[in-house]
Length: 599
Image (cartoon, rainbow, N blue to C red; front, side, top):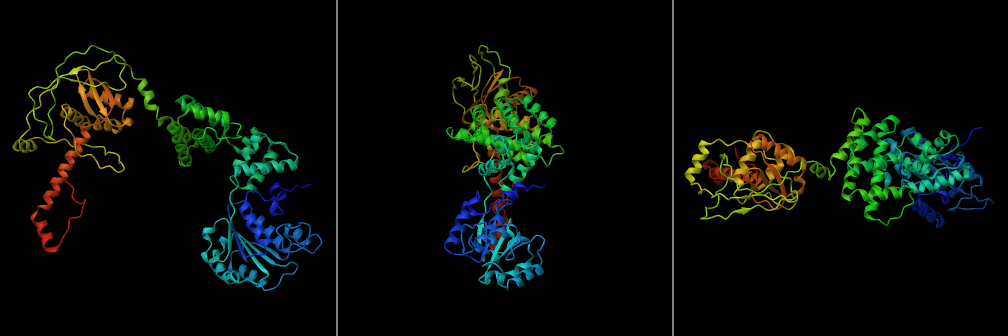
């Protein structure tokens, strides 16, 4: 004895049985009740949302005769008259369903239109339903246009498509269009409960939730998956069997992953990835479940009082409290982008591991954790020390301030993050040399060859112009020359180079230097350690301390000021060139802005 699949057995027979499409049901019911009927309808939507079902119910509503044979057009077809029974059985002579995917040629459409010249045999209306209408050829659409615009009064067209963008606008303008929406998982879940109660099958709530999410908005897919789950579970729907059938990841693995990321536990993350590989679970499913959990965590963080009937709500609330809101948003974004990388890697589990390790590496707290691993420096009594001689500069950038008669000693401010009890030593200020004359500057340019500097561009700031000025400080010349030496020798790269270029040397003695940066993102323990190592390689065995504050004199600012000076000099040279002036004067030539670059 053969059984009827659930998707066909529980196909709605009237508008009252339809779920998830209330906006379409209301519009069609009111039109049928008030006899305001259109001659052509277009139903759009993804697979399994009810396009064919609505078409059949509409055909029954137009041709229903009632139980006594005296009925008329109605929004509630009886389902027992000959017309209703034959339409449900797909044998009603005045209701024609044509699949445009296999009957897309102009001959098929001409045959359909030839039969439209004859009045209905049994019912009030002839109803032509063309499924996947977007697959008709250009000639078929052209042949259909005239009849579609002015059909006989007894003919109704019902068009259905999953891709309305491919339907010509001339066809769209002749139809009343309804967009059937994908089903929400909650709607699918409620309908599955109703169906399984009618079948007398017990099911776990969590198993039905898995089926509802796996259907992805399609009620037909949900019922087909339920049929498969019943067969897989020998007539029972249990969470473990459904999860095994779908190949989905148990949320306990996802909860452990999120918890390990919150604790920066890389070992646990790798162990869970290996466990997923051994169990043969889908890597894409793991990231999908992780995105769902992070989305629920973000909702809990934004609206703590948001109610939810999810049995995992307590665990999600715990993880939401353990992970900062900004980090949750970052992880969610990286998980979404990581799903697209699975198909690019030769091994999807290796790609999954890399995505999860990337989540661990880009945590905002990673730099703080690395900073805690830095061994503390023992405090010592401040001792006055003679400052080290400043190295020769490759090229003067700006005239330093005039020397003063007496400069009081300067005490370095407290550095952020220094161990308790540590005090920076007092640094004696050095008298500034007199400003060089124009002849001296010209002679310096001729005698000294400047070292090319690779400058990391400053990230674009909204509504802010690039900084091309600086205020010279007493340590600025020495720090600029030191950084230039490190950059030229490629001793510092990437973020460490950016830290050196964007920082200002505030105070120094023989063993300790204090730097200041404006952005907290540059103050990372690993970057500071690498910069300190590079300085030791250059002959400066010092301990670095970094504070956050305004920067007035940094190597980046000096480089920008020098570049701006060279740009102005190049523009002046071009504007003052006799040939250029002659071209401007005689032919009205103009210099294209931004086209002048210094050599």
